[in-house]
Structures are given as structure tokens and as C-alpha cells.
Amino acid sequence: MNGETDLEMTAPKNQGRWSQEDMLSLLECMKNNLPGSDNCKFKTTESHLDWDKVAFKDYSGAMCRQKWVEISNEVRKFRTLTELILDAQEHVKNPYKGKKLKKHPEFPKKPLTPYFRFFMEKRAKYAKLHPEMSNLDLTKILSKKYKELPDKKKMKYIQDFQREKQEFEKNLARFREEHPDLIPSEKKSDIPEKPKTPQQLWYNHERKVYLKVRPDATTKEVKDSLGKQWSQLSDKKRLKWIHKALEQRKQYESVMREYMQKHPELNISEEGITKSTLTKAERQLKDKFDGRPTKPPPNSYSLYCAELMANMKDVPSTERMVLCSQQWKLLSQKDKEAYHKKCEQKKKEYEIELIRFLESLPEEEQQRVLAEEKMAGISKKRASSPASKVVVDQAKAKYKARENALKAQSDKKRGSDKEERGKLPESPKTAEEIWQQSVIGDYLARYKNDRGRALKAMELTWNNMEKKEKLMWIKKAAEDQKRYERELSDMRSPPSSTNASKKLKFQGEPKKAPMNGYQKFSQELLSNGELNHLPLKERMVEIGSRWQRISQAQKDHYKKLAEEQQRQYKVQLDVWLKSLSAQERAAYKEQTSNKRKSTGKVRGPNPKGKPSIQSKSDSDDDDDDDDDDDDDFNENDDDD
Image 1 (cartoon, helix red, strand yellow):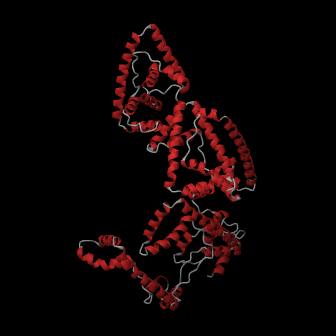
Image 2: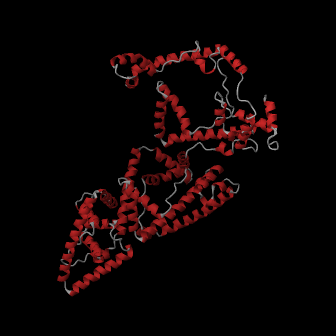
Image 3: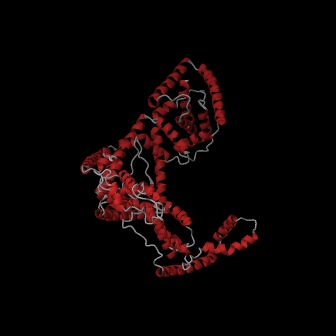
């Protein structure tokens, strides 16, 4: 039963669909996709075959597999005794062919590694000293002893290994010349090799260097050591291998397209050829190096949280968002609107910077970035369409117009700088921004007023600067942060006229007691001066953090103290009010009611039963000025 008769027997099935030529093409495609060393049972190899690669013309992988099942059912899958005898004769003539090659008497012996030389030399000695130990325990001891050997003694074993390795390679080459019939001819595929990732390129390079220094290292030791080095590699060095990987991928694309034209039967999609070898993190790193702007927070609340969290490094991550939420609720509507405007401004600036970045990229990269950003509603499908170029041009025109409007707006702002300065203090600058302001003129002159290139160069220079060089600018940034906090606290404090009215005291008025356990805890920390070294904002954060960490029993203790002081205060207040004349009592009530109305307009009522961060700022005022704090607490008392 030969192949031709088999095909003839199978041909009548689905004759309208599968011609004899198609079936022969199927078998040829299967043959091309077989592994180089096909030594397994046919069922095993068949189960591992990638039928999507076998697919050709209009036939899918599933259709090809079904047809192969039909054809193989007509072919015998056993061997006759005649065929076995032929194989036996070949085995007798060449008993060492294939997997048994290393058992040939003339095959050179592979040299022992430096560690095994040490192991074989010392094993008998340690076995006598420790007869109770198992082979596993002896191996562990000798492995530890070898690692502790000084380099001078270890070098002796390494040199012996290298000398014997050279002899082994010479003898192996001689053996291949003398026995060419025993060496299997390696069937190499002519399909171009797939491009490597940046990490693979770096690993192959560093592995050679590592093995020169430590030729006795095992594969596991090499992988572990180099794996740690890659994770600690600087961005600058990582970029070098990212660029190499991109160059290799471009070469692969051109070579693979030529190969596909010569071999149209291979079913490899365009996506398979152009698939990126970079990870998401590597792509982001390259974009950042190329000048892609950082995306701003999506809304005013996120912007506020980002600024606040910069000073919360010592606060547990689980508590940060809670504190940010509490602080945000205590902001006035005016402050929230200021953050909203700031956020919108950052978004507009980001969109303009993004368009500048897009203009510096080739067409394919522009489509990729637009698809990632989802700018102007461009989806990946639309970005890959021919009309995407028109959409990109429209987006550019739109943001060019926005850039001009932004410039006009900034010119208008310069005229009303004094007025704006009174509304909201200038945001604090980072160390990098302060340094850039000092050198921007030199870089613009160097790059002929090309701001984009100048900013890229400055960012690269800053990233490569040592910490000692950055220290001066970091100190200036810290001073600017303190300035911002000081101006912000001054801005939020009430005007001097209201302060004067607040400080009009009635003689003998009792001091307001804390409203809850948290206020009592705050007063205690602020009054003992323990947190005086911290800025106001950080002081409040630290108090909140400490309150969260104390036990429930301690919280209950502070609550009882506050309740006791409240009872004493109410008794003292009743006695004091009775001692006032009718006129003085009316004036006192008028003052407290006016204060309640004015504060109600700005802040609104505080939620009952929850300690707020505003209470903490009141407690801080108590440390600085007892009179101010008394009035703040009286406001809450009147609510009672």
C-alpha cells in the first residue's frame, strides 16, 4: 500500500473541496513544520503540531487536521518484520549512531567541572571523617567548602578544567573527521530567526563576560546573578539595549517579508511579523527619553491628593487616602475651584506638549501613541485605517489653535499678576524645575530656540547628574515648599479686622473644653512641643497618623477626659453667664451668633460624631494663640 494508492483512495471524499494537488500541498506543509529531530511516536508529534502554521490557501488549521485524520486512516501505522530486520542490520553496522554516540569507545571524555574535581578529590576524606552522614549531607558540606575556597586555590581547579576542555574540543573535532557517518546531519531551518528582547540581548552579552570571570558557574548561578543585575540596571544603560532590540526588529521585518514572498505557503500574519519585542515598561521608558510628556491627574481631587501625598512618605499607605479625603472635604469651595482651574491648565499644556511630541515621530509611532492616548476618540482600529492621517492633522490643527489661545491667556495673566498672587500662592517648584529655570537660557541658545530639544537635553542632563550636584537644588526646592505652605496658611487665615473682633474678650469667660477625644489628644501633642519641628501641614498629618495607631482603650481614655472637661466647662459657663449683666449677656450672644453665621457660610456644618482635621488646626492655633482657639471652640459650643 503506497502513498499514491492511499491518496487515490482518499480523493473521492470531499472531492469538490480537496483536490489531489491540495492534499499533496497539505502533506508538504506538515513536513515543513516537523521538528528537526523527529524521534517520538507519530501520535506525540501529531499532538504537538501547530495546525495554524500548517494552514494554507483558504483551508484553516482545523480543516487541515480533519483532512489529515481522513488520509492517515488509509495508511498503515505498523512495521513488518522485514522492515525491522533492515533497521536491525543498520544498528549492527553502526551501533553507536544517534543517542548512543557518547558510548563509542573512541568518543572523547568530557572534562569534569572545577567543582566536581574538588568534590571527587575531597569526598573520600570527608566520608571517613563523617561516616554517619548521607551522600546528600556530604554534597551540601563540600559545596559550601568549595564556595568558601580562596580564589588562589580555586584557580588551580579552574585552570585544570580549562586545559582539559581545550583537549576535549580538539579530540571531538578529530572524532567527527574520523567518523562522519556517526554524526547526524543537523537540519537547519532557513526561516529567519525571531528578534530578541532587550533583556535577551543584554543577557547573551553579559553571560559571556560572566563566564570568563567565573567559568565554573552553573547555569542557575548565571541566571540568578544576571537576573538581579538586569533589575538594578539604570535607565540609561537599559535604553542602549532597547535601541538595539528595535534595530534588530526592523531588520527582521524586512528579511521576513522577503522570505514570505518566496514562501507564500507559510501562514504568518502581518501582526506576527511586526509584533513588538518591548514590554510596556520598556516602551514607556523609551517614550519618556524621546520627550513624551507625563500625563497630568484626571481631576482636581487627584491633583490635590498628588500634592498632599508628596509630604506623606512616613504615613502608612492605607491611611493616606483617608487623610487626603478628609483634608479635601475641609477645603473651601474657592480653593477647590482654584485646583480645578490648575488641573484644566495642566491638561491643556499636556495636550500641546503631546502634539509637539507627535510631530517628532514617524507615522507608525504617531498612530500608536494616539491609540494609547485615545485622543479625539481614535480607537486602535481607526488609527490603523488610511483616514487616520487626516484625523491626526485635524488634531494637530485643533491643538495648535489651543496653544495660541493659551499663549494669549498667559499674556493676559501677566497683566493681572498682582491680583492673582493675592488669590492663590505660586505652586512650589521641584528641584529639577528650579535648576531648569537657571540654565534654560544656555540650552535655548545651544539648540537655536528649539524648546522641545532643549527640554529633552535638560532632562537627560538632570538624570545623569550625581546626587552631590543636585543637593543645592534639592535644598532650594525644600525652601520653596516651606514658602508655599507659609503663604497658603497666611492666605487661609482670616483678615486682621476679623481677628480684632475675635479677640474682644469678656472678662472671666471660661476656656472652651475639647469637643471629643481626638481634640484632647491633639491639644496634648501640640502643647508639649513634641511636633514643633514639623511644618503645619506635616504636623497635622502626624497627629492623625498617631491617633490611628493608638489602641481603642487609649482612645476611650481621651474621650472620657474630654467629656469630663466638657461637663466642667458647661458648669463654669452657666455660672459665668449668670454673673453678667443683661447688656453684656446680649452682646456676648450677638457676637457668638455672628461668628456662627460667618463660619457656616464658608465651611458648612461639620458632620457630628466624626473628628475632623479642621479640629486639628484649631488645636494648633491653641498652641500659638490661646485666645483664637477659645473662640474657635466657643463656636462649636454654641452649636450644642
